[in-house]
Length: 171
Image (cartoon, rainbow, N blue to C red; front, side, top):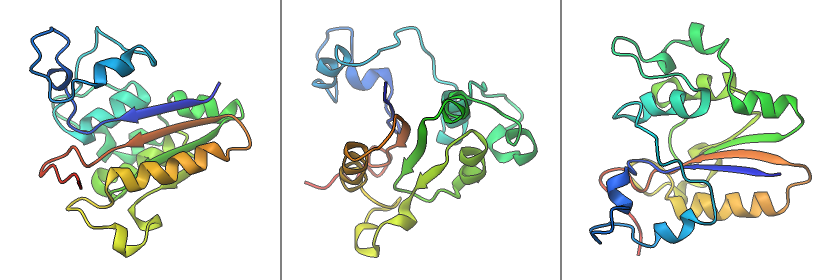
C-alpha cells in the first residue's frame, strides 16, 4: 500500500477538540479521522518542530539537553520507518515548502531514508510568498500531481507550514 504521512505544523489536539465542546478551530478535521489512522494515546515530543521531527520520523524522543536533529554524528546512523520502506522498494520522499536547512533538517531527512526531497527551492520565486516559504496549498497541489503519477509504491511525508505563526493562509 501507498503511505502518506502529513505532519501538520502547530496542530495540537486542542485544535480539533475531540471532547465535544465545539471549541475546535478545525471542526471538519474530525470527519477525516474515520478515513485514516488516528492515535488517541499520543503525546508531543516537544514544543518545536526540530524536536518533533526526529520523534515522528525516527522514534527518537526529545531529550532535555540535546536536540538530536542538530547532531549529524548521531543522525547518520539513525534508522526509521522510511529507511526500512526505502529498502523494501518504496519511492520515499519528503515534502516541505520551507527551508530544508532549518535546524539541520536536510541532513536528518537524508539520513533517515528519504531519497527525494521537495523543498522551497523546488518552487518558483513567485510561489515563495509566505514568511516561511511556499504556502501549503501550492505544495500539496504539486504533491498530489506527483502521487497520482507514481510508478511504484510510495512512502511520502509532508510537513506543512501555513499553520505556523503568523498563520498566513491565503483566501
